[in-house]
Amino acid sequence: MDNMVSFKERVRQVAINESQNYKKIFLDYDYLICFDSLSIKRFYLITATEKNYAHLIGVNIKCSPYDFFVKCTDGSLMETDFDFVKPGQNEEDVKGTVRRKIMSLEKMKNFFKSKILVEESFKRNKIMCAIAASDSNITIGFSSGGKSYPKTLLKGNELSSNAVEPSLIFRKSKSSVLFSELIYGNKNDIAFYADMINHLITT
Image 1 (spheres, rainbow, N blue to C red):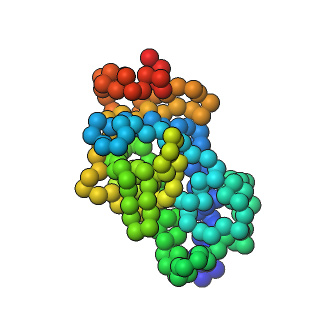
Image 2: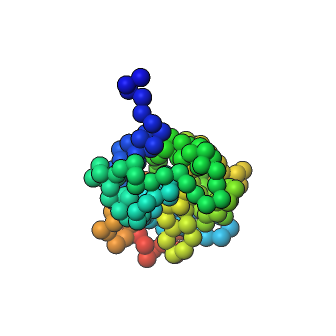
Image 3: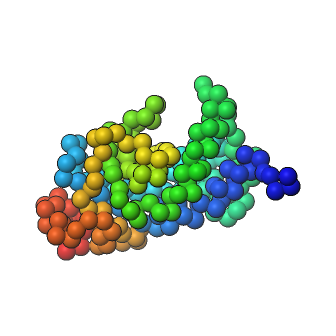
């Protein structure tokens, strides 16, 4: 029984432990995702900031989103820095959502390492995203705009039957101006998108 921890402590530990994986995936790199079958846009630019991390955990934070992430990365996050109280929501329902999110957060380190499916205009309950991507283990929803930021994290594959496989996914370090590393897809397909993405990639 001495090894038992409260749910809130479990959330605190996962938030701290997984912050480095979030950094490695979304803060160290940007992504360019190209499609040949989506109806709204042919490519999306995916990026992230420290402020987006709290969205993926789903708790009510008592500090700024930026400070929440910093406290996670330096290990100083306290149980008093967050709770499960949200307007118009039952606290037990919020806990259930957070429970699913932290289970998904622990699987995020493998995102982009296997087959990805994507869906535009993603909607689940009250969640609305410009695009969502899933590797079948988790689903990440991204905001709209010139660049799309992580907005929500869901357990499993929550995409509809309209989801498609992207043709190409490029990656670049945040310090780079252009994308040069192809991490998903066939190099022979790059020419098909040349007119649209030449200003974004190295040739």
